[in-house]
Length: 145
Image 1 (cartoon, rainbow, N blue to C red):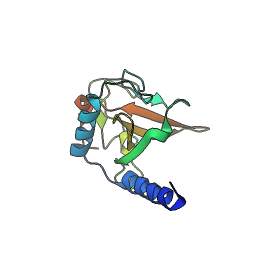
Image 2: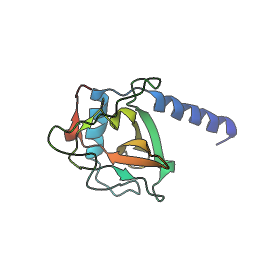
Image 3: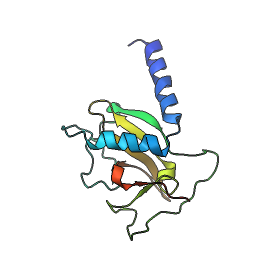
Image 4: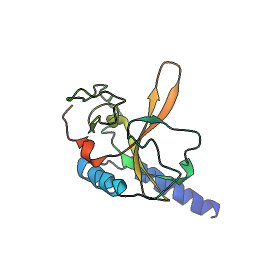
């Protein structure tokens, strides 16, 4: 690719990453992702909970799909949604779009296999840690914040 093609590809990825993803589209992406069964370097924790992105993760294969952020200029809630006693690290924790950390997520898809993932950056007092979670369509809920 020449410089102009690379620049256009970068613009395309930026635009895709800014696209707002709603519940229906997220469910469709999760369903399509859940049936991909071939091996790929992108496979993260098979249990489905939030995981730290490892250095070996194939970032170069991830393509932005969109964002779950409603308004980047409004501070999103830190309230989590765990009606059945789950917690942040639970593999069974619901994926509630309007609740933390999903309200800060982007969605990416692997160009090699088609798996889709939720991503966000956990920003603690002295660190920033990128995290990733595979999407289970059975855990996606439409819970009001």
